[in-house]
Length: 449
Image (cartoon, rainbow, N blue to C red; front, side):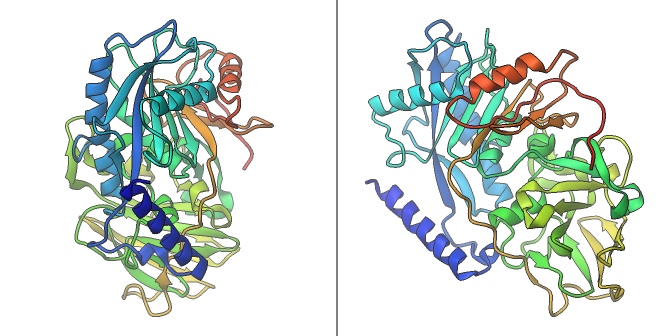
């Protein structure tokens, strides 16, 4: 067994022990600790009947997008996890292949593609677990009947990405699919007029506050997602147990430490409040500064404390609008919870939280009795893959539809055709690997709350 594999097993064992002991994992990572590394094997594959037009160009672009500095997927996850987690290449040359699979391109069978790609990699000297922790498959999109641009296990070690004829890989698709590997689901929104939680209804579109909600790589993950992974260390996520007024630092960037998220009891659920502000230390030509489009205080409902199923609580009508759907007040009379934003902007915000009908004091922050947020839930084994359709993966106009049986199907708006053929394609893709979530066509109308 490789030394890195032994180190990884020891790290996982230590983390499991912490979880079993009920310790606060959010405070476990220190700046001088080695980040958890996921060794990803990036594999370029061809089919019997379809090949990449320029496989070497695909490999060159993949090296840049996966591992090429701060703007790569590795750099993004290092940034949003505050150095607690990153992706590293499993192969010396970073990208392997192209391997010609003994399969036709269609029908689109993601399970068969993954099995064949893993077998080809093993024949080339790369064994799962011993040599790599996850596998990311790059396949040609020309002529494909897949109906998706990307797939990702939720959670799990597998991602599939379709590469365009220009040999380029969508960074939006990558950051989204690797988010599914972390256990994150698609991130939607509820409309709560005037911040009254008793009036919330299911809204159209995704939240726009995370790559899982149509924000693309230009935004970081939302606070509930960070809490679920333990990526707000050192008391940055505070569980509110008594009425208090807090000064929130921006979720990303700024000075180290500080309170960056509030975790508030709401009956059986949790209410998570964050402040977002532009982080100019993380920019690129395409996406600009991280979080520039989502300035303000935002709130999320985590049903029954499941942070990976959180939803944006949007006080504005219509689809999510980035800065415009920030909250000023939230009220839940049933659970006697009041949230009021006193000041927001310039890199910090003041948020007052009243519990049990007790008004928050006018000053102070993280008062005694309020504690670090709870430890994240331990994840189980590999989950079902989730897929995205179109070049604008995670577009804010995405909608959700439920599919009975094997899993859930999420539908994004990319046109006006019937969803039926693409749902059928999803059924083929999921053979042997569970349910599929699929970005496909635009749907109008509401679901019941």
